[in-house]
Image 1 (tube, rainbow, N blue to C red):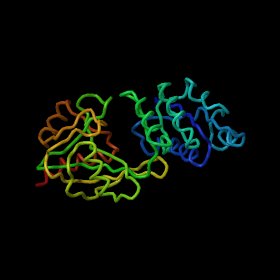
Image 2: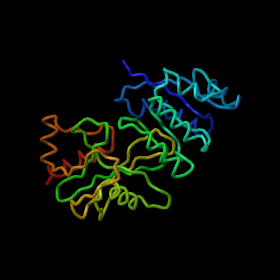
Image 3: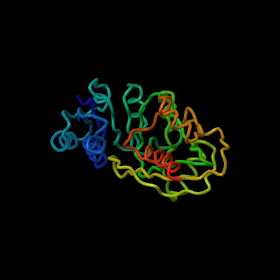
Image 4: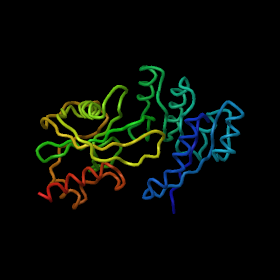
Length: 267
């Protein structure tokens, strides 16, 4: 039986409609997840927005007070697509309620508001910020791959590093910056590998193979619980023994790791 995911929406505008369509497409993009999204409730201050939420977007009900959506026990994940000035307050309420949060950029109107939301995150919180492009590089050096484990992941589960492209950056610059920020490793070269279907509005996951200057690592930015250089033999042995695990099969991260493992087999 499919796992039910109750959806709440705060703000029924253009972006709110895009988030809703993304939830509807989730099962088509990721059938292996076996998740069924249920549009439980939406909130909007305008009567026309509330009417649209029910009649056009398909939510079971609409509320004027957004707190009623956040507090609904049938809601598991909340999308924040209201005006920017409300993002901080809404995001904090969603996190305090223990719900998964998908908030459109910007999280706050400045560094202080954004930092306040970040400080409210529990280690196991499920969150996402709406950005346009995300780079997913597999960083290599002398036969080893640099992989990380996020807080809340089980021991032994590793994936590639990842980060968002900032305004004014090339994709290659974003790979170099994000890898250094997360790990302290210096990337000398990177090449595009493949992309991952992504149902979120205007978003795309872009996979890269990257070369590091050395295996030297720095303190990083604290986003990862563990960083490790893993040799191919160690990875194969860990996967066989069950002490290591990979991201889901549909992800570009797993494709990158599998291709890296296959490189050694073809030489």
